Each structure stands twice: as structure tokens, then as C-alpha cells.
Length: 404
Image 1: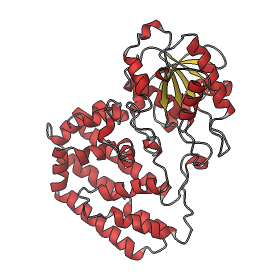
Image 2: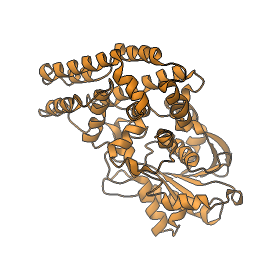
Image 3: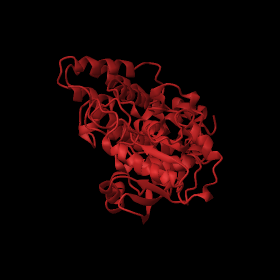
Image 4: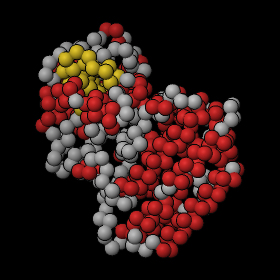
């Protein structure tokens, strides 16, 4: 189990170990908390600590009180289950107290948390402070998920990511109350588990387990391409891959938009010109709201069946919901699949999006992600732009639970 979670974040794990969809969502969103659950030595420290026992007991009391008294008040339930500012601060303080050089918490940070890259924004801090920052990030992420998918607070992009329920509907408070009951299961032994379970169930009942779509990628939709990567001499190509960002249709029954088809055709031209050995199609289930179609999958099918690109040359990135994460997730896969990071890749798309990527997107990435997931290269045409991936892209995005 020693390097299990490094492999989850760096994408190298043979993931038959985690067959349940909600497990993938959990690992991607709340990585530190999953480590604390699964690492025996650190779990023992937390379970036996009196402060954390008291926090768990008090949380259970709040939940039970909410079940009895909140009635139709959704905000009342949410306040009870979310981490308060005081609880987050108390946990941070206690983690500092428990952290000792070379103890299990220190080893977890040094051997798993830091190498994973999942909290790369804090890499300049001491191991103790990285642990605290990672906890605070996961706690805020859980609170955000509950705010959006229980309380109905608008997410970053309301048109595509909003809650799936009418929170004023007569039966909705009963759903929330039932979730509270499930989340207060006495099997929960760690102080954060009730809130984390509530958040995960909230995503599940909203049909928002998008983060788990097509996982495990490496042994599923990308298996043939990953095998080909291992045999590829990238020095024979100018670019490591050709990235095609998706364009979702606006009609519920349209699988692939006209724009998506044209982008695939632009990429196929370059592929057949042998500028790169692989095409990466990027995009999740985005447009229209709660669509059943996945942009990356539909583009892959179009490339294979209409444009005759072999499956072994196509990488799927099926989670991105915005142009920021098209670029970030491409960088992640390049890193995870051991493709050359120093070699430029080529993004091929419509002129408007291509110009947006070169002229505007990096500033948006800094604002929304906290870093630049790529470096710009040369512009070849209105539709073609070089970029270099940045390994900082492994950093988890705390307020995008469908593609963290």
C-alpha cells in the first residue's frame, strides 16, 4: 500500500483496486482525506486521538440534532454537516500537534502527498504546513460540494453544473435528511468521514459522478494508445500529440457538434502529415445541461469510424468541462503516460478558441487554478498553436468536483 496513492494522482495505478465509481470521485476530490483513511499508521493516530474523537462525537450530535429540528430548512442541514471555520482551525491546530519528524504523518507527506503533485501549490512549505494546507483544501472542497449540490448555491458555471433538484420542492428536505442519516453511520471512525460521505452522496444523487467517467483510463479507453506510447520514439516527430478540445452541441439528442467534427478533421490532417504520433480528444459531458454524450468519446468515434484514425493513435481525456481544463488535463495525461514534457504539443481548434488560448486563457488559469498549466509556443496558423505542458497541472482544483 506504500505508494498506492502516489500512483492514483500520477495516474500509474492499475485501478482494478477501485471499481466503485464514488471511489474515483473521492480520490480525485479529497486526496489527503483518502490517504488518512487508507494508510493504517496514520489512521491509527487519528482514531486514537482524543481531540479528533471529540470532534467526531460533536459532529454526530450536530447531525442528530439537525435531523430532529431542521425540518424543511435545507441551510440548517448543510450548516450542521459542513465543517465550520472553528472545526477547520481546530483540526489544523491538532494536526500540527500530532505531526512529528519521521512519524507516520511525516512519512505520509514526504512519501505520498508531496510526490503525488496533488497539492503542488504548497510545495515550498514545510511537510507539516503542507499537511495542514492539504487538510484545509479538502475541507473547503467538501463544503463547496455541499453548498452547490445540497443547498443549490450557484457553481462556477451554473448553466452546465448546477444542482439537479428544485430545493423548494416538497420532498427535497426528506432526501437531505436521509443523506444525513446515512452520513452519521456509526461505522464512521474519523472526524471528517460524515461530511465527506454526505458530499459524495450529494454528488451521486445529483448524477454528478463525472469525475469517475471512463475510469480507469489507462486500462480502458486509453489502453491501446498507452501500449503504443511505450513503443513510440517521440524524437521522430515534431510534436508529442495533437490536442483537440471539444465543442459541445446545444441540442440534447446531438452526439457531436459540427464544430467538433471540423476540429477532428483539422487534427486528422496533421496526424496524417505525421507531425505527431497521437491525437488527444478532450471534453466531458458538458453541453447541454446533463447531456448523456461525452465530447471526447464522440470525437474518438468520429476519428475512428469516419476519418479512419486508428484507435491506438487516439487518447481520450473525458473529464474537461472548460478550456482551462482541456489544457490542464492534457498536461496531466502527457505527464502520467510518460510522454516527453520538454517536447511541444499542438492544439488544433477553431480560430476563436485558438486565439483565446494564446491571448486570454493563461490569465484565466491563474485566476481559477492558481497557476499556468501550459507554456505557449509558436503559432503556426489561425487554428494551430504550440504549447508545452506544466507538471503543476497535477494540483487538485477544490471547487470543481466533477473535474478536480
